Amino acid sequence: MNFRQRRPSPALRRWKRSAAAVAALSVLVLAAPPEAVSAQSSSADYFAAGRSIELLGEVYREVKENYVDPVDVSQLMYSGIDGMLDQLDPYTALLDESESAELDELTTGQYAGIGITISLISDELYIMSVIQGNAASKAGIRIGDRIVTVNGVKVRKQSIDEVRALIKGVSGSSVRLGIARNGIRGVRDYTLSRSEVRVSTISYSGLFGSTGYVGMESFGERTAEELRAALLSLRQQASVRKRPLSGIVLDLRGNPGGLLSTAVDVAGVFLEKGSTVVSTRGGSGDSGQVYATRITPVEPRLPLAVLIDGDSASASEIVAGAIQELDRGVIVGEGSFGKGLVQSVIPLPYDHVLKLTTAKYYTPSGRLIQKPIRREEGSRNVLAVQAPYDSTKVFFTSRRRKVYGGGGIRPDIVVRAPERSGYIHALDRKGMFFRFANHYVADHAQLREPDLQGGHLFGAFKRFVADERFSYTSRSQRMLDSLNVVMRKEYGADGERFSSRLGDLERDLAQKATSAIARDSLQVTAAVRREVIRHYDELAARRSAIEEDPVARKAFSLLEDTNSYRALLRP
Image (tube, rainbow, N blue to C red):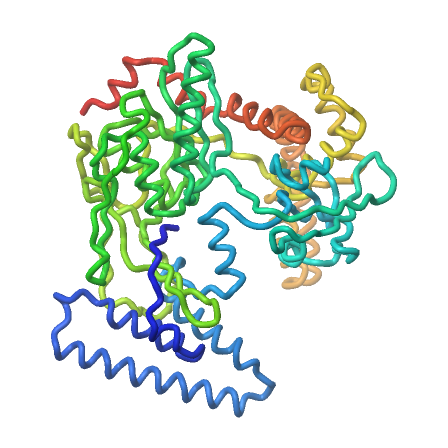
């Protein structure tokens, strides 16, 4: 998401909640491009809006007074607003007080808490990561600990959101956690003081051979500052090793984006000052802008590879598009998500905000990053004009290399990350890797590398999975089971006969599934190894994952091969 803050007007502060739907409608009417609106059409639009609002009020009144069951009138109005905004795009939304607070946390990377992340696995609430330097880490709480109570209240039946709300609070206040740990009997109470937790958007940075690596998870208020610090640290590390940096890998895979201004500043770390990064075009008069770098770059010439995938969106695509089109570096990985819409955050009464799409952004050459939005068949067409998309249209970089439109950023070098099998997905969904690591840590006070060798670790994991009575049914087998059920219901006795004929197929599928699981043993072992390491040292686990990553390895080898790198940037 890309956000631009807008100050609330005095009139806005005087609105009542019921005006929210009217306000959103009014914004849509006023957002039409001036050149496309004559005085006559504008008058017709206002008449249509007034008629629609009157109709909405009448429907609301009739439902409230005459519906067969009691209606929560507040939730009814909210659902109407949600339904209206859903017709525009997936990113325009009304956020209530709690959702607005979450949005602030995402953009600032800061909240009042104790520095942990939590997840629900097999109906138990586990600590998934601990942020160093905060209350939880100082108290000795670690990954894999299970939260039993919060302030004396059992949390086993509560949702994740409810527990988060209990743990978070005002800075300086206290929270009491009842913690259980594998290998230790009973529940231990921890009384922790909440404080401001700062979450870095840089997930990992380090040297791999002569190449620097920086992984970035989102674009928050301090991301550009954190990136500059990471790059300077890499320079210092290389100097200590007495070997010059051969290049930088900026990993934006899985990065959903964030602040537009931060995307410009991140690009400015690598681009010459004054370089155009992105432009926006929208309906209102102030939405058409060109954004250029304003800072002195840290690394304007060092070879650069940017990693993207199908989950790289928004600000990630702005940075990748600018780096590609200004021929500053090479894009490696898979095609990006294709989210090229700018949201303005508009304050509303009662601590609500409207996250409204007000513009689309374009790369320096004029490519629209936004992919076509698929709408359900039969849905109302509320947009008066829909721009065409052409995936074959050619654009050119500054050195006249060809790039293509149609949404998203296409990499210069396509490298696909290996897909996880259904079996590994099933293990992960059941928390098998995580829970095995918990047991492993309880039995091993220290991490020893020989214990992590493939055969030994895989054997221990297989025994654990068997003890937990984990079973796996492949997608093909599930479909066959469904077919059997349908045939029995639809054809009765004949269905039983048909089903018996599928016996051979069922046996073949079972054999195939067994073979597939055997083939997955290396991937399973790698996943188990990473999770065990993570329980001891999260940074070490991240480094291990990067070393085994084929996309990152391709980028490292490219940056070490100067001739190949330069050849890719020639037309």
